[in-house]
Image (cartoon, rainbow, N blue to C red):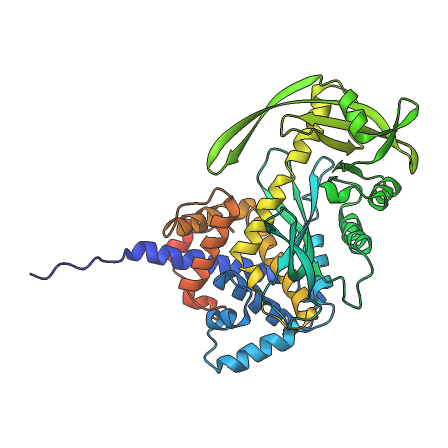
Length: 437
């Protein structure tokens, strides 16, 4: 007797089809944010690009073509996508649209984490304005940084201390040998100006050692912005004298203790820490009261933070600074999520303009998943179903947005094209159960 073949659960398949329809509907609503700022053909291209990136989990145009499945020559579709991707200034408009849409997410105590990154293209030779960047995942045998071809980038996200929910605010790439490049400070200034244009003085800016930059400190002071920056080694004014920051750190009384818990290779790790603070000033920016917060316990050398906060020496006041800086590590999850979920480091674009536009499109896709859906109360049911779909093929990753991106990819890949009419998706009986607006 022939073995019975397993039958597909038609209800589950129909449910997945409706979830895909809902996800399409949300993506098209999100696309409405772009309509007032671009001509109709460009808006259509942006819609195809966002769908293509999310459905394929890839930034290669050929992958988009397969997902779009327009029924015409693949070369013609790819050539059209490539032409549209070359539009000058598209990246800046998309970045501003995403920033404008983030209005309301950033409150006074929200962390705005700024973190530089690099896109490594080690084997690339013909991509425009390639130059040497540091490969953060590898180093030479002697421990020196390994330099490879690539591009520099910067990401900004908003998050709250102790909360894994994030809102991507900005993502851009640049080359130091491009004609429009002036300096890293100029690029960073543009990013901060864009954030301020929407969020004003709200937020606490958090930056790693790369933020130990007098130009950045002047910017914060000039615009009245709160910040937490990890210091390298620099002179500070304290106790009516100028001292080296490491000398001052050694004199700080560790008045508070805490235990920090975090995941390390899937296992919870507990680290006991001590921290304290003293008031200081920057010699270059006198009369701006700051505090040096010192944290011991993460290694042989103390963690030294310069901040405009910690105006009191209480545990609550200092812990806000410590926890705020530790939350900066969350942005590394986000950068990794974007690079891996959308295969960003496999980008294959010869022209610099196209590369910058692609970075902005990836920002828009990640914002759609993390903020438009991830923070939308009405979309919570959809997010739950998309996450469930991702569990059908793999375990749910620790980082929530991997699962959401995987669910969106599966929904778009399995259930229809971007151009398909909405009537093909409707099932009134099931849609009633899932209707959340």
